[in-house]
Length: 144
Image 1 (cartoon, helix red, strand yellow):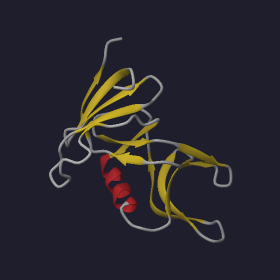
Image 2 (cartoon, helix red, strand yellow; image 1 turned 180 degrees about the horizontal axis):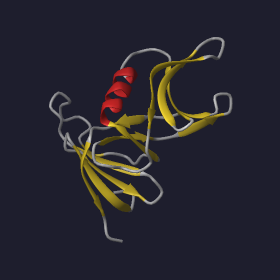
Image 3 (cartoon, one colour; image 1 turned 45 degrees about the horizontal axis):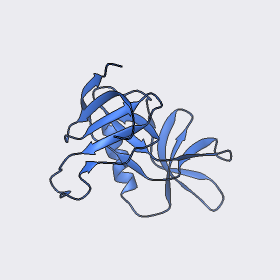
């Protein structure tokens, strides 16, 4: 493990996550039917993690599975999937949805490698890879 965890949670598909004091996460990906055995096991840490309602996570996941020029953005306390037109106008594909910085039963995690602030939209774009997880079903704070 590459982080020093302060809490852990498990999702409905069996993956185990650990979070440290800095808000970084690391995941042990379980076997998922339909996903095969590729990429199972301990994943590299992510620098950021946010939490959304599980149903909102499904909408975000669906929107990010389409090809096209979309971006995930965190702006004004919301998360959304958007496109940016040639006139620099933002168009929402999915969302905006509320998010939390803290895990809670029933929410789903979104892990992000890197965020980049864009003054022009007054928000943070996902600059590097991300992972949308499944509903949190168990949560435990660890002793220090």
